[in-house]
Length: 309
Image 1 (cartoon, rainbow, N blue to C red):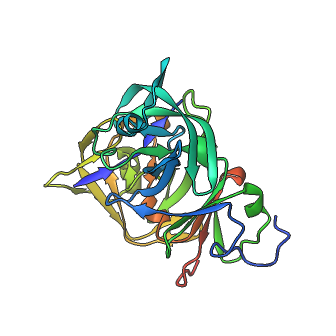
Image 2 (image 1 turned 90 degrees about the vertical axis):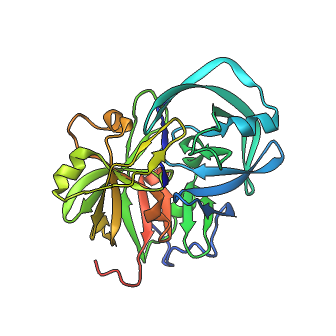
């Protein structure tokens, strides 16, 4: 079993109609697929070539291109320029590359500088790159579960729409290290106890650090046949899991979710020693329609028919 985790680069409405995603004022609409590990993947064109497969990652403050894709495009590395990548598991120093034109549907990112990552890890073996917050934060991002479509909006469009039928969850931005882009955190409740969590669309799974597992006072299950989880920098074995019957983000309830329990290297960067922290992966946010509204620091999640709270 392989589970993929994120790479984190430390580098009021006047409308009365309910917000809808099916026929709306999106700038572009593209289909997405889900990898076996749960990550959201879209297809891009780079310098007029492609398609190239990129994961969508809200916890990567920079975007990445694999060495395999860089070679295919014939792009040189930028001389004497590197950046530090803090992964969930390990840290590394990597060069940068410039792509003249990146196209996602009809949206264009010109003169984009991406981090060049190796292609020989489990996390990058089936990908050509990662779209990080340096691109995503220009928009509000909509995900619809039924048709598996990703929509890019002008942030002003979302702010001008009513939100009847949607639950609003606050996103708390925080600059970590020397990054120019913030990471975003939400407050979650697990079996009635609160834990802060990193909002990470690039993670295929939910994760708790040991302090969070202890704070929740739930008994983890040790794994006898260990798998591994990977990011673009390294991998390590899965040790234990924890099952939850009631997980909540704001007024939205998620039932029977599972967390991995691991003392990942990234936790020491994101939280102080002994402080509980979780990572919320994409599995939650591809179950229902949602909008990531970076400009207003919130998530909008469509209520399910059975929502009672």
